Structure formats: C-alpha cells, structure tokens
Image 1: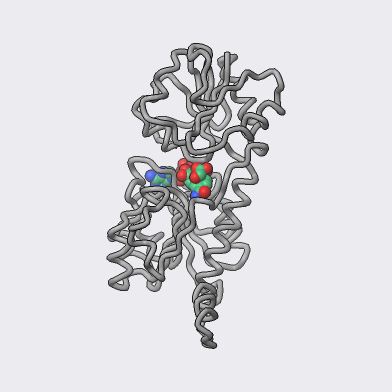
Image 2: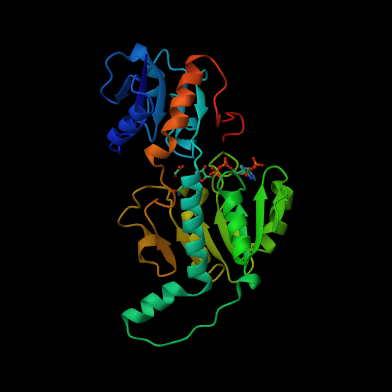
Length: 309
Ligand code: NAP
Ligand code: GLV
C-alpha cells in the first residue's frame, strides 16, 4: 500500500523527504509516477488535475496539503467514500498572524503611501487614526481567524469577528450567522476574510456587503479568490464605497497579466503567500492520519463534507 503525493504545480520531493523522515518504512509515490493505482490508500493533494481522484479504487482518505479543502470538495471526481482531512499547524497560524498584522498596520499608518511618496521625493505627513479607533472585522473565527483576531485585539485595535456558530473570545466582539452579519459589518472599517470557500461563502465579498461597511473601509482577502466579486470591487473603489483592497488570493491564479487589479494604486496584490505549509511542520500529522486511516480509525482534522470545511 502506498501514500500518493499529488500537486502538479509543486516540487513534492521535500514533502516525500519529510514524510520519509517521519517513517522510513513508508511507501511514498509522487504523481504522475504511480506504479500500481490499486496500492494507493491515502493521498496528500493540492490542486489535483480534474478526473483524477476517482481512479484509485482503494483510496481511503485524502489530506489537503493546506488549510483549505475547496479544491477537494469542489472536485466532481472525489468519491463519496473518501474521507477528507486538512492540516493544522502553529506555523500556519503564525504566518497568517504576521501577514494580517502587517497589512493592517500598513493601512492604518499609510505606509504604502509613504513608500510611494519616497519614490517621488515628496515629504507629506498624513493623519492616521489611533488603533483603538479602527474597527477591524474578521469573517471566520476558525483555526486562523481566531488567533488573528486575538492578536489584533492585543495590539489595541477594536476587533469583531463573525462565524457560523456563536463564540466567546476575550476582547473580541463576536457575531454569528446571517442575521448578525449586518451589525458586524456596520462596525467594521478593515474587513479581513478568513472564511473557507463553500457554497454559502462563495462571492460573499460583493457590492451589497461593501455598502454595509463603515466608511472609509478596506478589504483584506487572505482566504480564496472566489469569495470576492472582482467587478464589484472595482466598482466600489471607483465610486468611493471602499478605499482599498489588499489581496493575496484570486479567482484565477496566477493573476492574469491583463487583470484590472494590477493597475490600481489602491489594490495591493501578493501571490498567495500569506501562509505556506512547510512539509516538516505537518509531516507528523499526515503520517499519523495515514496510519489512522489504514486502521479504520477516525482521522484528526477531519472535514465535515456536509458543511464544506
Ligand atoms: P476553519 O478552521 O475551517 O474556520 C472557518 C471559520 O469560518 C469558522 O469560524 C467557521 O464558523 C466560519 N464559517 C464557515 N462558514 C461560514 C458561514 N457560512 N458563515 C459564517 N461563518 C462561517 O478555517 P481556517 O483554517 O481558519 O482557514 C480559513 C481559510 O483560509 C481556509 O479555508 C483557506 O481557504 C484560507 N487560507 C489561505 C491561506 C493563504 O495563504 N492565503 C493560508 C491558509 C488558509 P464556525 O467556527 O462556527 O464553524
Ligand atoms: C492555503 O491557501 C491553504 O489553504 O493552506
């Protein structure tokens, strides 16, 4: 039996080495070099080609290589019987905390504008609000959203968070469910999306939502490009409904050269790097899940296929 690594756009050798270091007896294969499809019982996958996942008759479980599982659940070739799990790691949380704190401070303190002013030799002080007067709203209070919210509150921002189920988090105003979304948005100036991509959250960042934010407002999307309606963002920026957007994820990645986002001063683009899974940080949990699946036991970090995360 074997563990298959599937990620067409990545070099999976470091993954194979990290897993092998965890257990030298593992039989690991890297797609597309599969000796016998019937031997594959577990896969680790990222952006797998379509029409692939149903060709392994004995596959029991698949782990996402990252936190998101939308690439798996949105794949029509994923058999119903296959269990899905994700990775959870302190290093993923730490990187996301760093990225989001960096973006928020940049926006609050006008740092992007100062970098541009330096390029043209302009000495011009801009006013900025105190952190306590900036309302930050975080969509999603899960493995990443909760610690991000806690950190921002600790730094001194006024922080709210929105999730499906009710939460109680020190120094964070929490809101739950669709009914409470308008109240949450009404106290938000900097909106951070850390939701999983599901049918309910697809296109959630649209014009109707932007209009409910406090003015001036910024959007930070570090979740998935499909949460955002690109045309609505352009319209909202052009009509002054929102001030700017800081985007790490896109409907199409890499962001096409001709995409309107590239030429906008008030849209910052980063190439999906907010939080990257390091093989050595998650090899132990993947090997453990592989072994749990072989013995028919419940996996760690299992995804609920009904709710989509
Ligand atoms: P998670 O642990 O699954 O948490 C998801 C959160 O969203 C939960 O709080 C959940 O509410 C909430 N939620 C889900 N559906 C909702 C809905 N319909 N209405 C309101 N709240 C809803 O996810 P995570 O690990 O924090 O990661 C979030 C996403 O970040 C991932 O799915 C991935 O797409 C993205 N990500 C991006 C990067 C990057 O580099 N840009 C890196 C890692 C992850 P409950 O708590 O009530 O269930
Ligand atoms: C990255 O986008 C992840 O889902 O881990």
